Length: 113
Image (cartoon, rainbow, N blue to C red):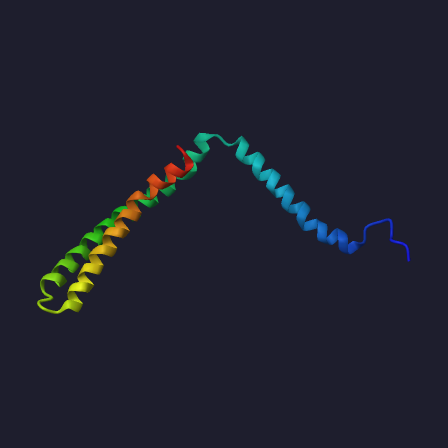
């Protein structure tokens, strides 16, 4: 049997999501090209405020955990398990603080701003 000269309904249905996706991509590219720096700053302003709130709250909590780790280390006596637990707590708090405070620097380094 000879092939049909017109596409079948199934082929059109398979092509439809691809066409929709391409249309959405082109619309998005057009919107990004039309946006200027002020629009991005307006969008990022609330996110920066939330990030700063979380960063300072985490720093306060980290200070309390460091205090608890210090008390645990001092009161451990001759128990090596408690000492190791306190050392690990301090290490994880320091690593967490470095990650939280260095995140904007890494983002700016990657974006090249």
